[in-house]
Length: 222
Image 1: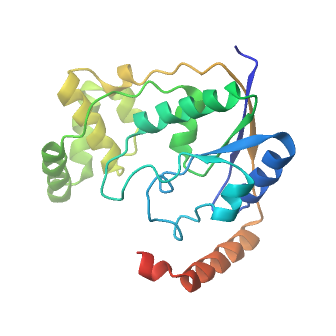
Image 2: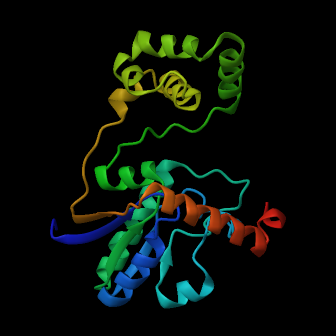
């Protein structure tokens, strides 16, 4: 089981992940699994640099256009669907390529995160957000540090969203989120390809991409 291969291509925006993935998939009989937290949304095509219809004809793509923009989609849902896609591709004798720039999605798959299955409590989140705005984010982080110093040490006090999530999980389960977030790496033989580029050249590519997106109708899409 451990011999099951998985190729991963990561890197910053506009570095060339899609182009490389298409070439390798065509050469090696592969299929792409998107690791992009915005390409899961229908209708958000231009701004997310979603693979074109022609690119999808060249190589099958998975985990794109899953939900409407006003629907929720959790890390647990992504992780489950990614594992399902990987196993399904392997079962057909094809090679799965996990491709994208959403680091948390990639890590959840490669490291086997055990993600707390606690649904969002919107009322609690709103109350804590208002408290952070009124008293400062340090107040919430200090509260987290009292019962979960391990999580507090890993979460930036200014990352209010993550602090609130940790408090939310504790409120729902009575357990520290650090105890619930364990890891069990999946049984894949992983090859990770990290792309990079000189900063000036990368920024030039990003500028050109944004200009192209505007010409394609990004403003209207938004």
